[in-house]
Image (cartoon, rainbow, N blue to C red; front, side, top):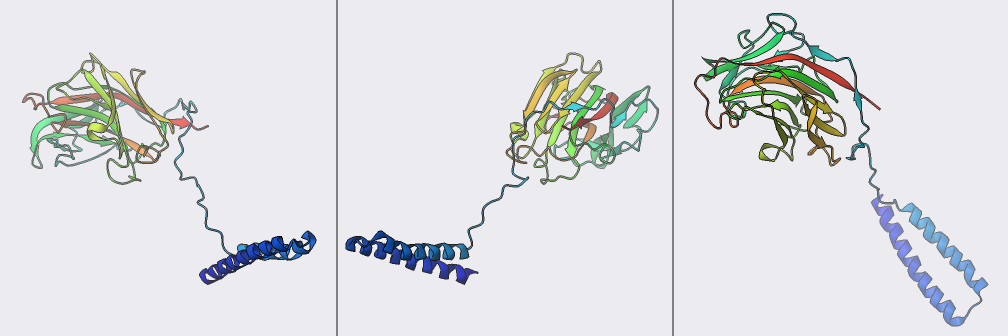
Amino acid sequence: MIIKAVFSDKIVILISHYLKLYLAYNTKLMINRCFATVPLLFVVLIISSCQKSTPAPERLVVGNNTPVAPIDSNWSFESTPSFADEFNYNGTPDTSKWGYDLGGGGWGNQELEYYTNSLKNAYVSNGLLHITALQENLGGMGYTSARMVSKNNGALLYGRIEASAKLPHGKGVWPAIWMLPNDYKYGDWPKSGEVDIMEQVGFDPLNVHFSVHDANNFGSNSHTAQIQIATDTSAFHKYRVDWTPYAIRGYYDDQQLFSYINSGSGYTDWPFDQKFHVLMNLAIGGSWGGSQGVDGGICPATMEVDYIHFYKMIHK
């Protein structure tokens, strides 16, 4: 294929050169146009034939993977949850809905707790889920707590997630209701994304935070918003995310405080096109939660959850 293309290009160059000489010659001699047309047409046909025999360079085909900024279609959500726990039972959290992340080591945030699946750290009673941190030594850590995950049964791609929760108080607590990807399609954290539906740190008890993280936006560069809730540790409040192909929007008590729009620039800004699951945990200390120390008497500390619902997005 390469030899043929090179050979054809040389023919085109030679014929083009001949054509220029021929036209100049005929012009000088003022030869009849009809006589000149016959060989001219012959030359043009040869050039066209040679050009067709040379493969044209490949053109870039734009496929479905090319990032495109979506249009806000004002999606709605189903009225019946696809996953829910009302916690209207007693004892161990429903094992058909919840699993656990286990262990210590700081969890990338210098946290002080060891996560267990023990009933004393996560239990249901009086219609509420209790996630409780205790001051006790386990696995080289000075505290125990629970980090519950819906990964196996409660994964979702686009939809509404809402939970009603009452938060713990005391300097050093760090409760969260948040989302991580099931399969880390774009690589390790933060490349595959994270959505924090609710975070609070005990040294700043009235401020509750909503954030997203991705390859371009993490750490101090995260997209985040906060709002003051005067009764976040004494009353239940609704924490919610509406997640569509266009945007991630955060609502507290149905008041919108956060919006992050899909720019269409690709996964580095929008890895949120894959299934995510929910986590609920109570950390102690850590790079943020413990940045102003940990009070000695904060344990037992408990985050209470009244319910959690997942509603699928209605596609258009």
